[in-house]
Image (cartoon, rainbow, N blue to C red):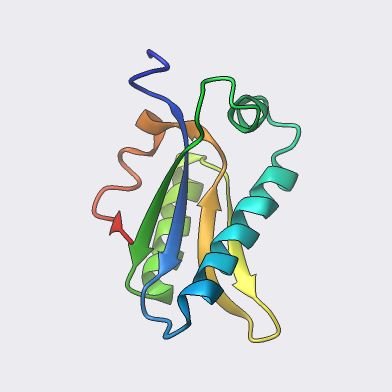
Length: 118
């Protein structure tokens, strides 16, 4: 596909049911994205994305109703072979958000169907 119409993207998916301050939710998203940058450091597409070889990094921030929906999405990503990092806040052990590894936008089309912007 054309890199302009099908860019490398990262999806950040946060739970909407947590009554946390905005800053705390932003921290969770940052934690998940930082973990992806580290865990995917040997991945060719991640290196291309993080080096901004295609220009600006494209991210989509999405929201899910709660833990069940986040788990369901994680299962769909697993099924599609799309790697991600599920961020689980400690010591509470609460799954809060996930961030995908950089992949082409088209690869996420099916999996992200029905997931709305945060």
